[in-house]
Structure formats: C-alpha cells, structure tokens
Length: 67
Image (tube, rainbow, N blue to C red; front, side, top):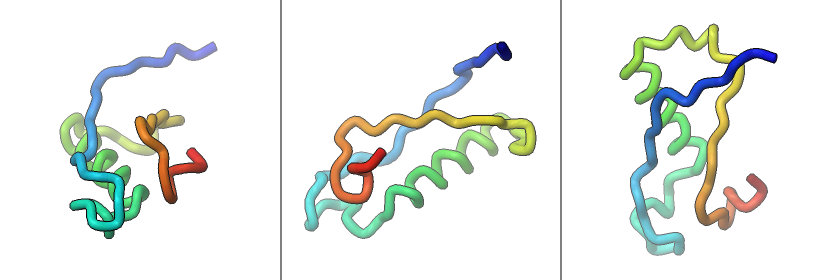
C-alpha cells in the first residue's frame, strides 16, 4: 500500500446556509476549485502527480447534501 500524507489544510469562506446568505450564489464546486488553486500555488504542485483528494463538508445542505 502506498503511503498517504496530509501536508496542508485550507478552508473556504464562511457564510450563512440560507438563500440570503453571503455565499448563496456560489456553487460548492467553485469553492472547491478555489481551494485547489490555492494549494497548487502555495506548494507549486505538479497536479499530474496527485492521485486523490479527500474533502469534508461540515454541514451538508442543498447541493452539498449528497457528499
């Protein structure tokens, strides 16, 4: 089995989970894309060498509900 490593953590902005919340018009996939770009830039990662990414969602609602 190949070793796995956790070498950094990034979080998305916070907002209220309701239709009038600050992030109500931002899709979850767009938030994740920002996380990935931040990690890639921070560490100058060769993304071709990444096999897997594991994410978590604290309060899955709406489009995140199936995660």
